[in-house]
Length: 544
Image 1: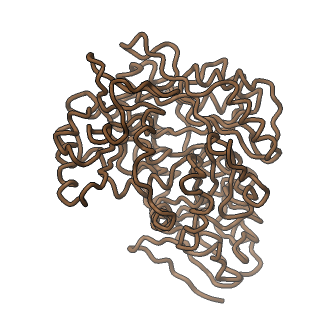
Image 2: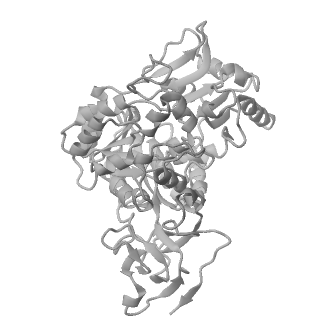
Image 3: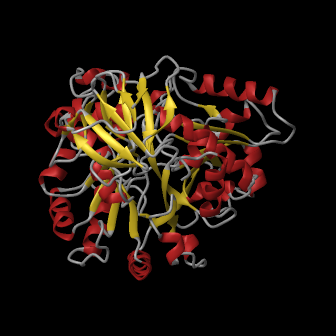
């Protein structure tokens, strides 16, 4: 990363929360060649070195690490229809937004949208092909649900994909049908790939440019390290794409997690690609054990509320888990498994219970989301050293679907973060952006607010017994996220680490919990260099 412009800088007069348990607070740090050379109290400093940067008494925390997200999806979503409030509150609104897109659409170009949540629609149901057909019958339409595990398409898209009443459900997927057996246009889990695979593919250069453009937005949210949990080898290799994005301006330190189905046929896990000293590197192998809670495809037990025969969808076999684990161990990378429901989490933990980890610098196995772990699963995960990467923004933003699908009391037991931590499980926070029904899904302060207040955006109680304090919330986005993602020399402002940090407009430690999501990043630094600045803010600098 070519951002080492200075030799020595001293940052002083700050309220620095370091995320280093051995030295949690400081007000001054010296940065030499991009790394922290000294940190502590200015009164203990023998002399000021180099260029001086006055932090003006503002709160400083380490750069944030989003341990589970989808940057390319997020970048492309900005160019699609946002099917979320405040613009879309009903199926009628959705149809109208699609019509507007059709008016400026190139002939035959696919119309895409993201983020619908039927729980927020006035109609209280998901859109169907017949709803979308009201907007367009000759232009294919593909709308992704907030969870990204479900999509709805119009009749033209079904026609192009060759999906009819006689098309069987693919393994790990379901084609919704009406009482007459006709596809409704709703495609669950792997079924959505029947359409997705025929859609036009952007070039590597186009995607790399989108990622570079996204970089500044992420920096404005204080995010200096990212992950991509849906990395592919085809039709475009993500490693090449992200490295190209760096040349175009992507600044974040980035870990890629490749889908197991791609790695079966492409051996790319060699030492050069998994070297975490590289800005872009491969960190693990990804599988899915189930779907989502809000989409009623998570593999649960008991079944979903009011749908007594629906236990969700199991999307992986034990044989696949073991084969992927063998490959991960042989190549010294992580095994990363999506699981939300009780049965999915139990299935993974029981498969690997007692297995010794193969990595020495972090957990060998991660469970992503982990919405509904049982007490037994928590105990066994702790004993086996399995880490959890979770997203507190889900229950905050998707409360209607959680209440509809689980009921209020069961909802309060989801994402038991405090219980996980008390059991000794390694936990990291993340956003899964753009896979949630929120206009700014990647905003880390929304997730922190959710975890600290255990209240949804509408004030609904999401489980007060599982509240954590703001210090812990910050740690789960910094130090703990680093220990799980294994990105070296970040996550704490301590000697030897990269000087990646953010300056906030208000003190996150002192602000009222319900106001955490109003915090604004004034400045973001990577390796001691200013990489983002809010236009209304400018720090005073002097030189020695």
